[in-house]
Image (cartoon, rainbow, N blue to C red; front, side):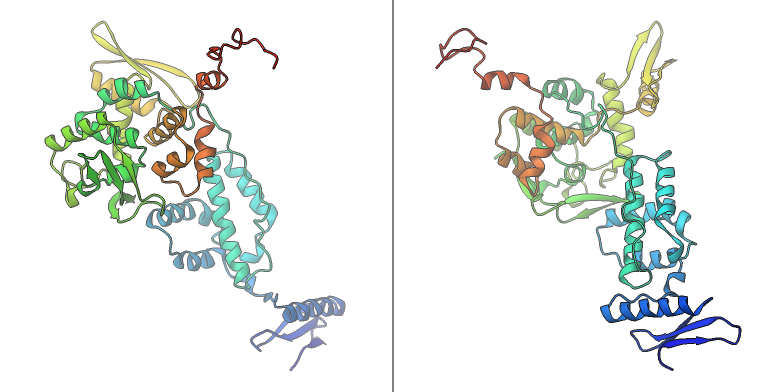
Length: 411
């Protein structure tokens, strides 16, 4: 039987056609006109290569999403992050929905609801992954269009605590002395060389040349589901780089090597059993308590025979509580205080210091491991707030003898 429209014994009208594979297909309509209109659309779509089976949309979102996820070939950390978002947020919402039943309004309503309880960044990832599944369904001729197109996500408003920059003097004189000695060199390398966490925690002995004062970034450590492993290359091609070591940092690293044994694979900053440090544990047990001790996160001070701890929660409410010991007070403030300097902010600070000192952007780009100079310029030239550089550039000190500072002298 070829294509056409015929009346059924029940009084309805059925459109018949052959799909691009040659298989006979049909669909029933209430009127002859509806059947004829649909058949004309199918014929046109088949001739232009845009044919989509009207029955394909019955496939469930969850089934197609799992097939799509099975085709992933991205990095392990990216895979783990995306799989977690799919499992936690996307599949519980759409898993049992037929693909054809998901429309733009339903997706937008869901995204708006998520914005009330999740961070804008997480909501954006939910939208991205949902759209990717629907885009795959379009490419596989299961649905005719992607309903996630033009779905709006609430903009992420920058906060004063985003991408903080610590002053060099504060970093060296207050923060480093507050870090436990075993981990002081790791923090010093992050701030003194601008390394990412994985680059710093994955530093091995063969990447250091202390006599020449250089460090090579040639590998990194990744952490997935609480397990760490070496990745024999950095984040990008430009990430493989050589970074100069300042003299004060060479001294700190030498002391660390003399005092602590190397870990597996000659890992410099190993844990007590020789393995790579876990970022999540380091943050809670080392990094944030160090910020408290340095006076950079909340406060802990003597109050008679007890310790008075002060901190601020996520809602901006200030709290205070007494503790019997300093370690207990520090641990509590580190856990309860909102925000605070992040380990990655040391990398931002490093780049900002270089820009403030007038290091050319192409050199900053190289030591930071950025693929494009525009990334360096966009991220860091806007961070610097050293107004004295502007005054020096404008000869505010009147070192040219052209008249009093601030007075316009005619040519």
